[in-house]
Image 1 (tube, one colour):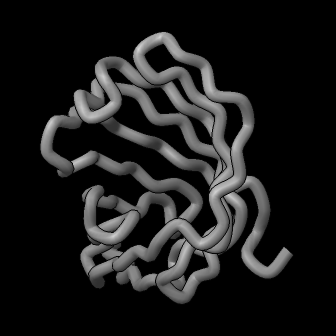
Image 2 (tube, rainbow, N blue to C red; image 1 turned 60 degrees about the horizontal axis):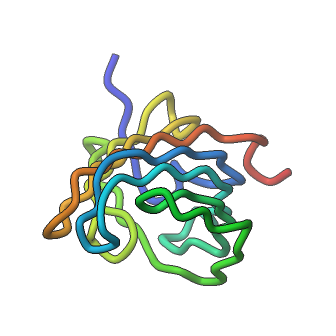
Amino acid sequence: DHHSCSVASLKGTYAFHRTGVNNVVGGPIAEIGINVIDGDGTIELIRTTKSSNGVIEDWTNFPSPGSYTVDPDCTGTFFNKTNNLVVLDGGKRYLLLSVGPGTITTEEGTRQDEPGN
């Protein structure tokens, strides 16, 4: 049973966690937060807290941090094409893999609300 995807597949508030190594910031990272995704290819807000190479950053808001694309096969890009994306469960979840130089990070997000709520 094949389902087609689009940017509208991701819409709502998503909780996420990101882990891996980011040599741009100096080593291992761990991050949790919230994305507000508008369903039109833009991300309205990201709120995160993270550890970058052992340095803790408290909760920080990043308004309008970027955009995303979704192809009909449910793959695409996130954060201005610096991450590859897979949309899962009709948009209830997503997976990211960083494709930036010097990074080996993955992220998983889960929608916290139904679209439109």
